[in-house]
Length: 142
Image 1 (tube, rainbow, N blue to C red):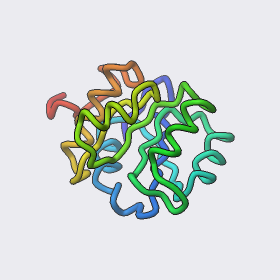
Image 2: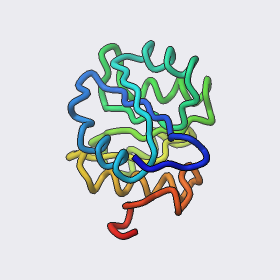
Image 3: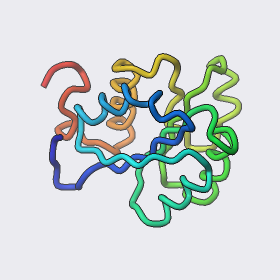
Image 4: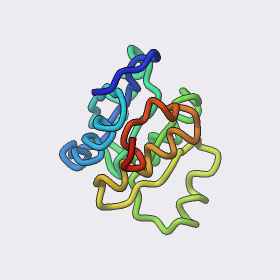
């Protein structure tokens, strides 16, 4: 794990099948100082948000009790400064239409591997959640 003065980037992985996020979790952990929390339902996401300084929630398309998109809609109103990424197989234009104004950082597509982690890291740098010298392996070089 890589250290920085800001402390770890705290991330919720929201899915009813957490093993799906293992490759992207590994990619993020290898690239930056991160701390992960798992949630399988909307309620679990909001419980974690109450007690931790979460900066990013990565939502699967389906949680145990609702869709990831439905939780994003609520999160946008209740915690508008928390960034989100959402796994979705929607066509890009439809995804944009469905998530416009909700603060979704990016759409993640299957498979959720190292390439998805790199794209997410680049988006986190672009929006200022990670600074360039905080990211070690985002471009494959140091």
